[in-house]
Amino acid sequence: MVRLNGHFSVLSDLCDRLEEIADRLPDKVNRQDALHVARSVSPTVRRAHDFEETVLFPLLKSRFATDAAIGEALNDLRFEHWEDEMFAEELAEGLVGFIGGLEPRNPEALGYMLRGFFGGMRRHITFEKAHIVPLVQQIEGGGHA
Ligand SMILES: [Fe+2]
Image (tube, rainbow, N blue to C red; front, side, top):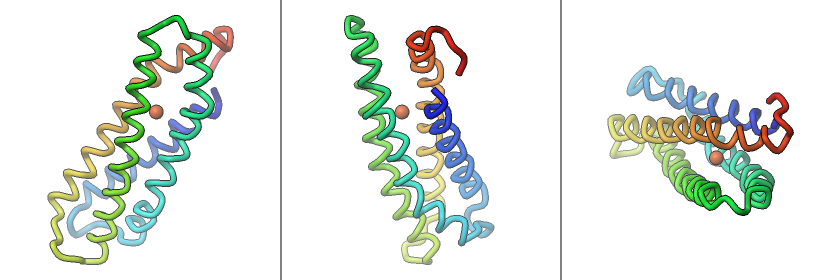
């Protein structure tokens, strides 16, 4: 559970940094920060997903094997992970292109992309906190997060 919360907070921090970039577009973006975020977005997202998909979800799937709704929810979450990973790569490219001043330099499209990404990511985290965390707590015997 500690590890899960760690991943949630890393992803939430990433969302905050992306939101800050979106808010600063087009001229107040810190290029150094934006470049760092562009480089770290995909690996950060993948690390969090890997933990859920290789450790957490298999555990939940076996513990709640008879509950079809949980199985479906986990499949949906896995699909969202895949979508977010694709999206993260596009976003990194968009950021690098913007910072590098490549044409077409389209801050509106980049802002839209950023907001779409961190908005979806925050909804995903909210869903997992509401629906996945209680299952983990059940397994851990109602212990604290
Ligand atoms: Fe997830």
